[in-house]
Image 1 (spheres, rainbow, N blue to C red):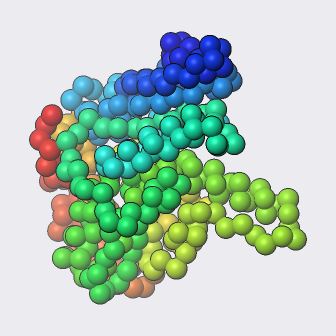
Image 2: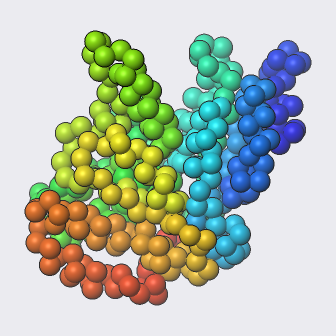
Length: 321
């Protein structure tokens, strides 16, 4: 971290801009060297911090010591950190480019920041960048990835990082098994969405006679039909960051606790964060809204064997590597 700080401040101390990229086990970064990262922020360091092997269920084979369920929460406490939890390679590309432009382009009003990206130790299918990608939404924290067309009750699924494919799995199960039409949103930065919402609240507090500012995530989700269900491979506290700004019924799934030493699929079933768990949570919220009968929820729990950790399948597509 000392080397990162030296390189990250060279634009000032040496008059020569260098770009540090610091890669570490995400569990051990902010938790063990968080004070040094705070000091780097004090010194206006710039650069990229990569939290590799992120998530509570992606590296279970190395033991619970490596099961990161909270680094985005710790990162959010450092005002110099711009934190992202990207899912796909094209998201990372846009974020890295935006980070370079902000920190080294010479045009941003606040270039003295460090970008924290969580990446995962799990092979997943990497899709091509969608046509007409909402790049502004991607960089600000949220964009709609997939729209549901089942024609039944509506729901909104929010996910980030390695959990995004789980939301897409849930979207398909909701459509095929229950006739529910769910949209899927990629949340690239819970932290930036929360900061934007807090800034809007503060502006509205201090300027009551001016038109009220609307948080970005509120504006993106405004008018979206159905309950909102969010999932990550981290604690509930991560998706809970945006709770005050979601314009509707909002529930979250998360991996709290120390971890679970088993396969990825079993760990995700244990924490109820896999695709079928997201389906059941969505059905539960639809039942609360009176959109479906409550008996459907119990039927879904039985159908997917939600109480059996050995019945989990989410996350096995990439093998055990």
